[in-house]
Length: 286
Image (cartoon, rainbow, N blue to C red; front, side, top):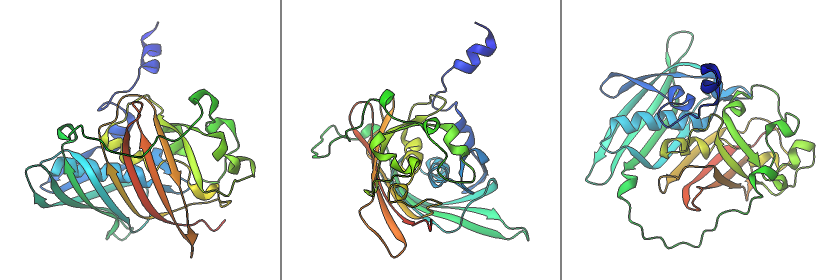
């Protein structure tokens, strides 16, 4: 096997992957980080919100004494664009087991002024220090085997504009939730499927911040197409995920007044609930 072939087939690892490179931040001075928003994580005409959350999560993990996100709440103020950005962090409180901080991402307008894109308040801790006591009624979603699910190449493109992010994700959707792709949405507001990164990088706490906001929106199954911009997104990381594909279930129970909520559960290959989220989003007008 040639060196080129080995390079192409090598699986990316945590810390050495496109996701890690594209969410990298560079410390400029205390509490200030420079970043570059990659066009590879855009959908329709904006940078994906989960990708942005992971980037700010990385900056906070460097700024705080604890490295792992436990609870991250983000307000999306304006749409982000590929290009340079600056992240400013502030340590709010530090304790023995938990620390809290906030971060904002800014980009520059044509006149040189800064525009705040997203603001985050988060609590961090040590996932490896969590107890083994689990008392839950939650059950992993029933999804057909991965080989029986459908990927982006199995149907027509549902929306115009950039779909660059889909090239970086390995998503296989439950056929019961892809009626929207063939013009027959179920109307149930559900999206389920297998999730991973296309280069084979396993999930970690940081990439889970991407996972909760990287599936097709449930609004597609409600018969709507187009951009579904996130207004607010809160994510809870419950434990460090085991290697292997993730199972993701997202549901919407109420679309009213032009807004909808999305509740996401993420399960790892060991059958553990590793992340949960709720977001408020603006419904597409399509």
